[in-house]
Image 1 (tube, helix red, strand yellow):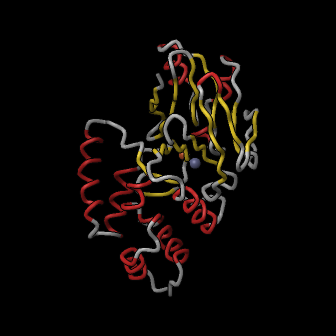
Image 2 (spheres, helix red, strand yellow):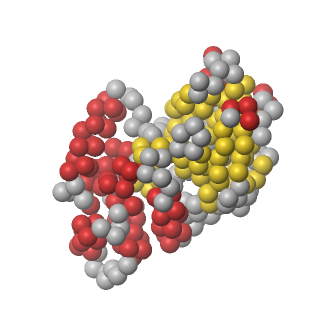
Length: 257
Ligand code: ZN
Ligand code: FE
């Protein structure tokens, strides 16, 4: 039996924990205490920590967890994170034998320069993508370039449609609000807003999403679609020629929304 559970942290972070009856792996533990509590309550041994990028809300709990558990910490090779014991890069395979889990590392720079994602297809297709792809949105471009972010999202969108996407923040309602401004006539988006509002009213996570759904509702994955292109073109005075131009202005629009 394998479970995946979101541990709420800070204002809107999710620390994802995957576990069986004995072992657990944790993704982006920004704070240790709720993770330790979950591990103790469920009598779990920590087998590994996966880190997507260096921001403190994703790494802050590492040191304390390592005092209690002797676990490898996987993280991006191109970022300086003192608690990472196993730096990984594009194409690396991670085999977590205690959990019978395998992940492939994807480099997806943009939000930060070295941001990575973890993709696993056994037993089900799952993507842990930190602050790069969000439900109905995408991460801010802090260190990398908009072009890198565009290509990183393109890379993620080429994974299988039925991939479950586990992002690291609950931003969905806010993202849908923006998406509806950009793409007001999208019926899937209107439907999604109702469903997601109902979930949030009960404090239920809107994550995971799927790539199939994101391709129909997430404007950042739809910069080659006429309705998104027209809408973004109307927003700006600049002449936009390529999907990358559209993406750049769309990201800019969201920053000022
Ligand atoms: Zn971040
Ligand atoms: Fe974050």
